[in-house]
Image (tube, rainbow, N blue to C red):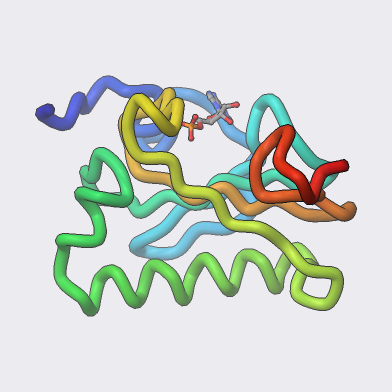
Length: 123
Ligand code: AMP
């Protein structure tokens, strides 16, 4: 699948669509998820054109590393490391990825339960 430069996150990165910005540097942008699934739900995106984790993780190791350092910085800025947080990266249809620009969900602010809805740890 080719990268679609008109996907909604590409438009947010270009400033064509507003977002509730949380963090930005030369390689990454973070903003609040429009439909939060937890008290804190922030998306962190590399500014480069990558479809998903599977695509991004094949990029220059230096770029991949720098991006995840930025993700850690955002989690710290949100005050999450002490209580804990979860990172989610969806790739493709089975994971229900809905926006084809790689992004990391940072979720926290309450106990998040088990890994997946309905799994044993959620009961
Ligand atoms: P995924 O299913 O992993 O592709 O996640 C896409 C996420 O983007 C969902 O959690 C949506 O709520 C979120 N989202 C979609 N459009 C926007 C937007 N304009 N601003 C902020 N978050 C958005």
